Amino acid sequence: MQNVVVEKPYVFVPPRHGRFWQALLRLYVPRYLRSQHGVVATEFLGVEHVRRSIAAGHGVLLAPNHCRPCDPMVLGRMGREFGRPVYIMASWHLFAQGGLMSWLLPRLGVFSVYREGLDRPAIKCATQILVAGRRPLVLFPEGVITRTNDRLGALLDGVAFIARSAAKARAAAQSAGQVVIHPVGIRYFFEGGIEEALKAPLDEFERRLTWQPRSGVAAGERIVKLGDALLALKEIEYLGAIRSGPFAERLSRLIDHLLAPLETEWLKIPREADVVARVKALRSAILPDMVSGEIDEAERARRWRQLADLYLAQQLSLYPPDYFGQPAPTAEQLLETMERIEEDLTDRVRRYQPLRAVVEVGEAIPVEPTRPRGVNGDPLMATLRTAIEGLITGLKARRRVSSGQETV
Image (tube, rainbow, N blue to C red):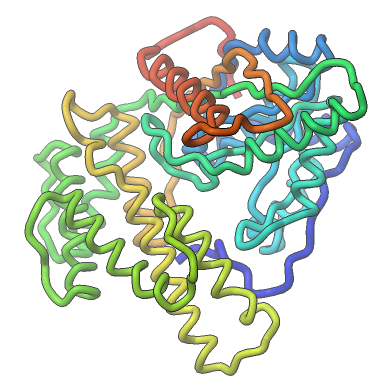
């Protein structure tokens, strides 16, 4: 289980507002992207939409899909395209682990958010950035790294809440311009030989299962069999036996087996529909007493086991059962699924390269200060979802675009 939960009191980490460090670190980021994530080129499309919004004096919120850990670094580079650095909201656990990233992130305009509770300082900071309108703000509406470039996860409603709060404050102050959301699609293209790239990790994990490496079999077939075996192992661990039925049903059954008892114990409200939201609600209930130190060691150990089950449920939910449907999976879908398996088994992912990152910004979506009454769902979030999905679909069809490409 990766260190995504921090058992200590939350302290808000604000962004650094100066430009000196951003300008200096800009020279380091391309090397970091290449050496740590295999991203050797970046390409930015549709940035003229953001330029127009900035020129009009709008508070600009950029809302991208979140398919890889390096997304914030890629988006940080986009600020050069419209002449403004960006602010980025990121999970607090990234700041709480020390090391280079905790020093680097604030200086790149990144500030923390506590996902296990209501973070008023982070909301206030984000709202003030949009009210001031001096730099764009990046919020990832999925709330987690999905590793599914061609599928958008459920969107959390915090984006709409922050945008409307800022729109209301701007209207009250009679500021020029308004608050707008620009949907953003990010896609990574693997530009090497996918069968060769995946051979070593597939051989390794098949050996871990005591199998003979199936080197002569296509990577997609090997990944499907490996995924089925790993699900079967978890079914034996938690359900006592391997279950029958389609993969999607087995996955859903195991996730409910992990979450439903915890929801009965910890939650007094109806459960959320989306797994990520269900996990967030449970963490918010389980963690406070652990952070305050008001429980004994036995109870603390029990809750850590529960948190591990929550982590497993969320990870399982990020394997789309239909990702390997028809037509045949793309090189990127094969790579992403292999990376998720590798991450779940080892908590680490080796570097696969070369990757080319393409970012496309959509047209502005104006934000009204209040949410319409008498409608099902949030129309702002529905519009945003449709726009991001359209960008992702369009990017998938672009196998090679030379305009605006930059080697990093």
